Length: 337
Image (tube, rainbow, N blue to C red; front, side, top):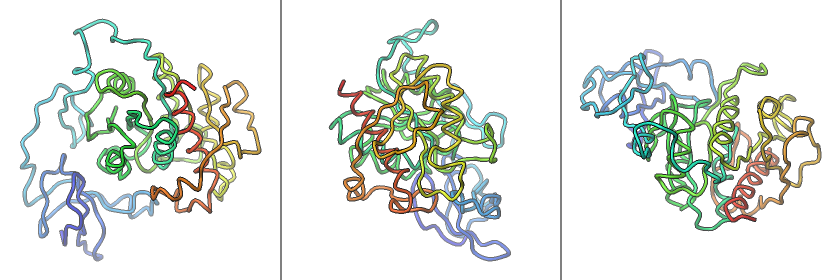
């Protein structure tokens, strides 16, 4: 390892391979400590494939130090039967009032916003805070994108701006700052009961898998998340993926990712839409459209994330307006408007 640039839960590194220096990361929860000069084994797949959201190598093991961190006691294992399996104590156990039986506090009757992409998290959280100042809104990180919770810059920084009240990782996703959950349903329930959240935003970590097919993409995680929220009795708001700047026709204006989820949902949900949207895609027909005004200039001045898939706000205005609409509708639900 050539150098360590950023020292945090996920460490940013430079590694020296035969072909030269390359950027890398190490999740210290899984690898233990790493320091400049260590010999490491790295997974090079994402960088070699040129993935836009995964442009770095990932440290698999530190040969110099080994797994020197003691294993934390836990009740369940995440990333089971892989070489990265590790024990965690799930938040569901802490939230349970009894060893068996139905979870307490149902139906939840709290709002849950389901996002399609991690890039929507910041505008949704910001707009919700503008609409419902001081509300305690947590983030549940699901499958569909990056699995390590520490990879989310937004989840690390938004609590400091009082825009998020907590961060749980659910299912295969791991390393949430405020705890781990076995399932998305368990994370939503724990957040809205044991952790005192008034609302939750649920969605994948950075990056998204895609095959260009109707069902083979990470956006399908929104289907499971929405069903979990509905089953718990939450007032469920879907924040669709819209775009005015994506060069691929299948993502304009309503991405086929969101269209497929809307078509497959077993029950209608509220769909947040910016009033500026001209077209009304057929996939919205059986759902409740919530059209609201959005404050794009206010968000632009807030100094939060302003790029999606390499495009700026000006290059893909509709993407950000859709996310801002989702935040405003979530805030209205918190306020009972």
